[in-house]
Image (cartoon, rainbow, N blue to C red; front, side):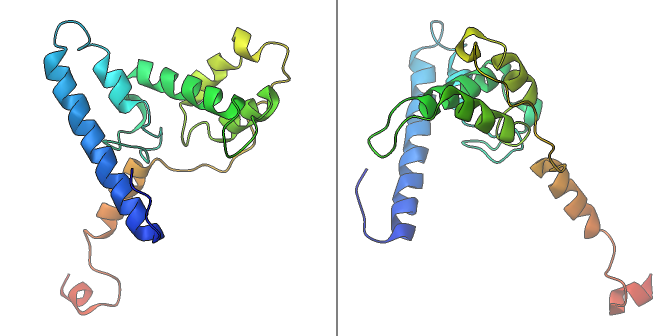
Amino acid sequence: MRALRKAGAAVLVFSEELDELFEICDRLAVIARGRLAAELPVLRHHHEGYNGSGYPDRLLGDEIPRLARILHVADAFEAMTADRPYRKALSTEQALSELRKFAGVQFDPEIVDAFVRTKWAADTRDPGRPELRPIPLLGQHAARAAHAFDAPAPGSPAADLV
């Protein structure tokens, strides 16, 4: 990826490169037909957010393949608990806390519940599910917003006609 000085331009270049990456994955699907075809949806969708906020296709909840949801949690845990050039690794407890914090938003809450019972989380205090305010899934929110436009706004000239 090219480094640019303007943040907006850097995001645009990064987005374009992600699009290219997904096109390459689609081409690989054709090449790998028969051998890796079943795994490609898992790889393609393991960055989808549970609430529909992820990429590349903004899938929502159970639309995301189950194995992709599992890989998303495992990949995030590994990324958080490994040293990076720009930061030190989080402790296992901190990483579990982050998984719990974003369960239902970024991660499938059932997968997070299962993950905290694995050997990777053994001997670590489970922070438990935090008390969260309900956050609607983006698709549900969009559906509600669409219905809001079905009728004219109260007090508008169009409302007088109804």
